[in-house]
Image (cartoon, rainbow, N blue to C red; front, side, top):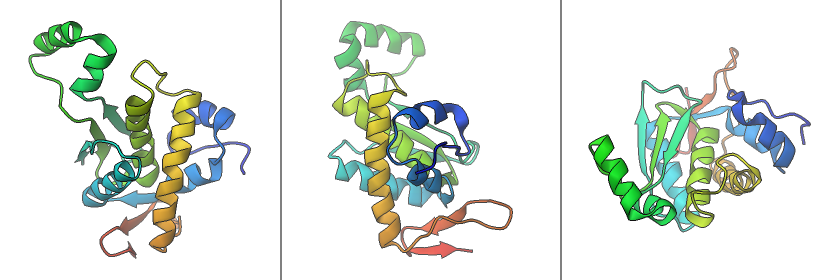
Length: 180
């Protein structure tokens, strides 16, 4: 296991370095890229494995491949903050919160980003919204999700790699092959 985790996104390195049991795995998943369809398929596979409500996955070409966002469902917000506060917030926003969690990722995105965001969905579902977003519990959930994503990667005969410039390899869940 590496002593230091250093993916494209450094924001979470201190938590992973302190608490993760699979640093090499996380780093490897930041070297495999997915297009919008594959990111949705991987998210569905991961949420099914952990018996979570399937999130609405929104790949967007304007978002960087190494960034993502997980938004809780309306039901999760009501459970955490009460219906009154959620309703007031919705009125201020001018729209309702979604009925299902929403995962926003780039198009293309990285396997590590999808795992990261599904780990947030898992924390929101199993541990509640008051659980710190990037603490010990989240790292444990991220480790769990990353292991499942890694099993899929192995079954698909995908090796973390990239081109000579360090760009991630593009993979296809539909064809189970590396795209050129």
